[in-house]
Length: 468
Image 1 (cartoon, rainbow, N blue to C red):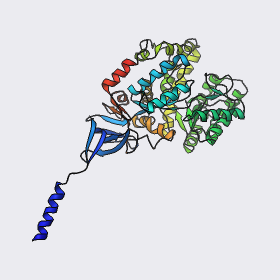
Image 2 (image 1 turned 90 degrees about the vertical axis):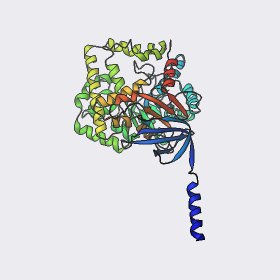
Image 3 (image 1 turned 180 degrees about the horizontal axis):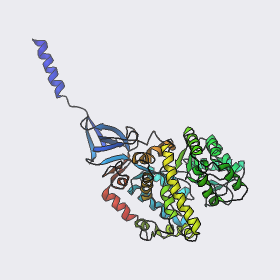
Image 4 (image 1 turned 60 degrees about the vertical axis):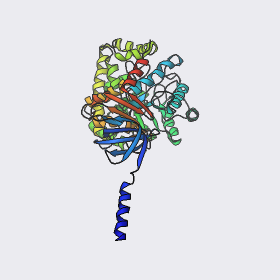
């Protein structure tokens, strides 16, 4: 009789023993978690400590306490958005304006940006460090620093190369700046220097993105090691059956960049495009369509932007930089204006074709000084909408932001999905973006590491971002 009594007592003691209760900094409960890698939505709790996701679990699967809790019932949560092509630039007089952009990114749920080259490198590096230590509100910044280009380049601050020694010195400089990737521009760089810059950057372990001189072919660019093609002009060239002919005419100075556009549109061939798409996929090359800014610039002669809400956040200095493109559009011939609009429509179709073929796209706004009415923050949402308007599914469009951005910069250990161990950069939405891509703008809350930005705090950010 003693043994059964002892067993009963042990059972009672074990039953009374308290279950382990885990403690977290933040609990986001009852959220509809959108897992972008699969498209699946699950009701889950996300548990965060020290700026990292510690657990993602179904309701009731464990006991926990948290210093703060967000009840996300009826809300949708996904990784914070990435804008994979912005510019922080414009010279010392625009440092304040550029720093102000950082608030706009966070207010729009953008927790990471890829700065694709500018002339404010030392300021950008300072902001980057302050953001990382949470001394400054803003997105994580991955920056190219100054661009590589040829002599007398278009953009201030560019590293100008003319010889192979120049290329080596330029990459030495970028290494000393500790940039996150290399951006190559095409305004003045020679074909030989361009291809040499790609090869030298890859030899040093850099991710490389850029434009492409029309005096080289897309295939040459890919095989040199280019990781990311910025804009669709260069993809269109590689999809044209007359690419070699156009390249030769450009090399001989018979035609210019814009003269080549109508001929390349006419030369587009499905068989050539199919081969090009396969080459891009096989070599793991990403493409940044920048559709929204393309449409905005194509219709500068028709659309009145004087009442745009976001003008109040730009400041006069940035707005003045818009005038160059505006005047160019207004002074264009009727034929040139029509060609721009045709090209814009063509690029929308091309983006859809790339997505259908399985080429990896990156959502980028190209926002910043000189790029008229492409506003930091809101333009990333407009880019996603442009993708969907051209036939790309909302799920695929969302993947072009954070997941593909993390893949492109080899940051998947920390970013790209909602799972244990990832940085807790998250956006909570009031409505499902898979049903309507415009719901990406219905932001309930933004989580950036340890920081939580409620609707009220977001409104305060926007209020503080207004400039005279």
